[in-house]
Image 1 (tube, rainbow, N blue to C red):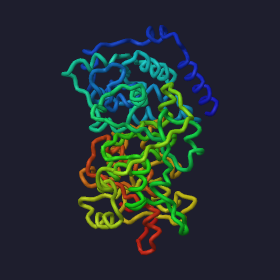
Image 2 (tube, helix red, strand yellow; image 1 turned 45 degrees about the horizontal axis):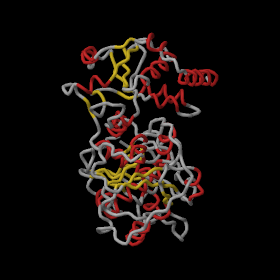
Image 3 (spheres, rainbow, N blue to C red; image 1 turned 180 degrees about the horizontal axis):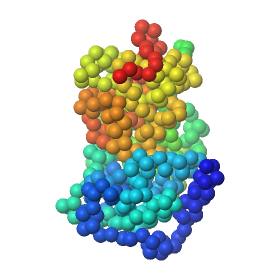
Length: 451
């Protein structure tokens, strides 16, 4: 099995490095808009968006006049083929199965740059697919009568090319009202831990300890700072309520944590680089090592927190748990953490879950994994995928959903993706499992939930 995986990975790399696309163009049939429209709802056909997931989400990239994807299409980005995962082949095969992209079906692969669909088609050939067709989605987008879908708040997670346009002095879509755009790099620890090794040009560093300072008591916890500390943080780093902020990070969890806290503080427009710094380097852009300092301010321009509904306090969470008809506490930890086999953290030993919390998935391995919410290139997974998982768990999106994890990082990423999709009645129980279980008076349960 390992030998097969190595050979297949090598084939993918050789295929992607090829510069002559003539063979691919001759091998796959190009179909027109009329035929795509005719087969769109036929069960023996499946339409696959092979572009960057940012385009699938709603961004108008590569000259497409309407953002989003063909209604009913699934995604399998050519960008995933370039990721450097030791288990990439198995991961891609699992994605194909999950999305019901199977060899017996006719597969329409579309892009807007004339390259992505061919790359995915080449990969699918290695997997035994033969009924492959190519299509230029620009043609579909130009006909306003043909249905396309995009996420309500797609703009909250930003593609690398849009960040590059901003740095080049351009004004990309959805930034027309952004007078002041700040790009920041978020990570735990001092600059030497990641920032000084390379960051998005012009960005300045934020150590997450500034928004969740470690406690002096044992065990050490990193909990959301109080109002005064957050006010000092905002002023020190020059944030005002009218800013537009793009948060980047080597590990997207840190970016989402800082982004949600900035939202909570009251910054009006906070976005995250979709896929983190990996998205920037995969796009072919260079990192810089020159450091940049924020310019402090003396007035935020409004009260802090300016958007308190982002965070659900422990008191609000306890009250919500008493009203399950309108409230769901979604546990975004691993299954092992949820049933009490693992605490998830080396510095916190208590195991279990909050009574009434519903398992909402996160990663498969540890407290820093987000497999169920990310694509291979660390971008946001198709919302249909995690909504289906929620449905299996009985999570009703018409209720108030309060996302929690250990201390807010994983929950912040899920919260952002839910916002991108369009859910509004949501929040983050920021104290999470660590805050809850550190209080001896709070009830804890373990074991597999009984249905």
